[in-house]
Structure formats: C-alpha cells, structure tokens
Length: 137
Image (cartoon, rainbow, N blue to C red; front, side, top):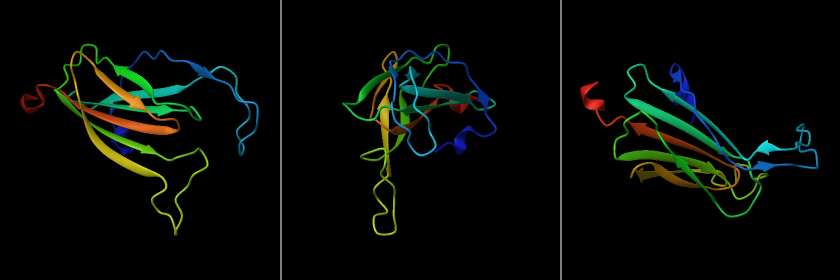
C-alpha cells in the first residue's frame, strides 16, 4: 500500500486529532502517553497530477472516527480511490489456514468541498486523489 510513496515529493499537512495512552508493553513497544490517535503522510508525483494520502488509525477499539481531507490548493478530481487495510483486532494476523483475517478493501470516495472518510481502529488507509486537470498535465 505504501509503494506509491516511493520517488514522490512529500507534502506538508496539518493534522488535528485526539491522543491515546497505554499502560502495558506490547511486543517490544513500550507504553505511550499522549500519542496522536492518527498518523498521516502525503505525497504528490513530479507533475502534481496525483496526491496520495496515507492515514493510520492507532486506536484499539470503538466506533470509526471521521476524518476530513482538505486538499488546500491541490484541485482534486471529483472521485478518489480508497484502499483500507484492517483486521478485527490489533493481534489478528493472516495464517496459512486463515489468509483473509487482515484484508484490503477497495472503494471510491467523492469530493464535495473536501473529502470525508470513516477510519476503523487499527487500520491503514490509502487515498489516491487525481488532480482535476490530470489529463492536461
């Protein structure tokens, strides 16, 4: 899912979200305090014909969280492609017997003035947003 980031130009972004804290060690990960619930990164290709946004939801449960993407000066096409990788829990893993426990789901999303998505806990979502004038670039 992140291979689309390679060789592209990083784009600054602003992110406003809640925080999480943990009390136990998970694998080699120490407890954290006040870590943002979401992580985000964005890139454009050389001719700015496509914006790719990756969103990671670190929450361990609860209802989906609503995220709004404002593309700023990037003029988006009306439709973006969305790929979400997620599982039922933070411990879930694909196995030989159950290769479908962590799956990716493909969908599309439509821009109004901005784009709103629902993110599930422990998910990674890639949003590929074509520029409105991509055919002329």
